[in-house]
Amino acid sequence: DQQVKQNSPSLSVQEGRISILNCDYTNSMFDYFLWYKKYPAEGPTFLISISSIKDKNEDGRFTVFLNKSAKHLSLHIVPSQPGDSAVYFCAAASNDYKLSFGAGTTVTVRA
Amino acid sequence: NAGVTQTPKFRILKIGQSMTLQCTQDMNHNYMYWYRQDPGMGLKLIYYSVGAGITDKGEVPNGYNVSRSTTEDFPLRLELAAPSQTSVYFCASSPTQSEQYFGPGTRLTVT
Image 1 (cartoon, rainbow over the protein chains, first blue to last red):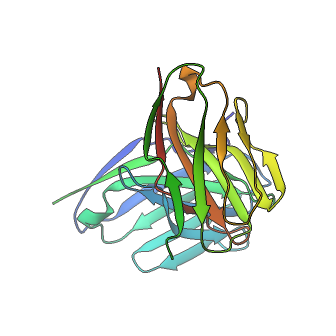
Image 2 (cartoon, rainbow over the protein chains, first blue to last red):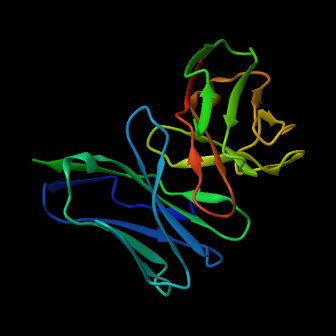
């Protein structure tokens, strides 16, 4: 039973445009959400997070939005750059330190 | 700091063989985790530890064992390798309930 879902396996975007990645969750106990980025043959690296007490968190080109009532979060990357081409994982946690991951979205930034 | 290191990077096992995947972190993090990632899937938690001497099962613990005798090391043991354990294994650590830092992964094939 997958508690975190990323329904778009892939996303292609032109360099300089906005990338929007979506994530849905089912467990109402989740109170902390993270995005990870992964390049081939490397481990995931932390990108940005948001607590359930907020609805937006911004870090440079990356912004995460949280809609608790819809159990939905999204990651916006503006502007998209070629180095952003990677797999992006959404993850969620409650207070037990364990992360539940989505299946990932592969982003390709076209020149 | 080297962060989280994993050895080996690659391994091929025959069915029924055993092996230990090594994981070491030099950030003095209390929390450590083992995940597996199957193709097209998100990371699934195998085991985790909240401190030296304390371990607990994650989502998919069957066929694996762990120990945590020191803060730095968190080895994962496969006793009787099966083809279903073919996967990429990631170790991670975190200081608190926050972003986890991942190692580069071990690609294991069981034939």
